[in-house]
Length: 402
Image 1 (cartoon, rainbow, N blue to C red):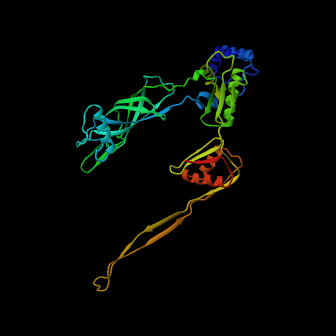
Image 2: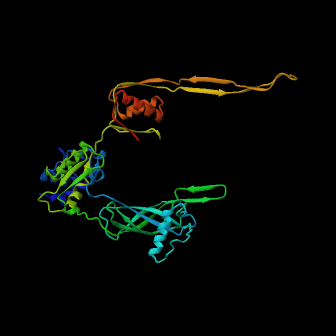
């Protein structure tokens, strides 16, 4: 019953770029001919996914597997070897305390002594532990200065344990830092390029503990949609059920998740099942939305944005104020006169070329943009116009302000 894990998968995936309509036509290609035989033998339903290859995405690109996630790690450490650009120990007491504690663990007692060095900096170390990372694997670590260090260039991070949210150590970081910025200063000027106090160490962390998660032992998993949508969730479930010829294998639980179950007669693991369905093409749907950023003047509109019949007028009021002061001097040999500055101001107002444009009901995104461009509207003015259209109830889309 589940031969699709062997022959059907490879045959189907080889035809992802084909746009041929299989229903009611003579199949001449050997690959499509084999696919046609499988369609008849297995009663495979592809009518919901085949017609729209130009606008489809793979399931693996629009969903995330529940439990397959990154884990954030953080640690506190010291960087040594700086050329006088480290923390001032008087201004950063935590650096001084950490330095004293580190030296005591190494058998050096300087407690109560006057320590004055600019070659040490306290830092926060962060890293991301990918899912299913094995013990002994290496990960990248990012380092940021915690005190008043001017630059971490040329420094070396000492052994720093990295802990997760549960308080357990999952990795250890150490090594020479790599910096993409620089800083320099003189008596009268200083220059800083990029961020010399934020550095990284490629492969600077070694995984000491694995996160226990046995995906292959699960009987079902949830496919979490990256962009939740009821229509997309239902299409994913239909595509999976059609591909496997089993109407109960996938269920659209809500707009954000699809439950994928391993059938009783399936001889593979849940990993095999995910592998079989993650390349199926899906046409994602999305709600009509307009995203605007008033700070940068960016406007992004979705393809499904519609506008009801409305008239738009756009014009700018420009005030011009010119100050041309004049100097008034007394007549020659005059005893009573004095030189004064006489102000002279010219004020004018320009209303601009106001135009009235009419947008018919149900116009598309392209028609809306074309209409606004005809008015000579700039991005920041478009933001105001869109908000006014929304307030008038004519914009059939959600406005999201960044």
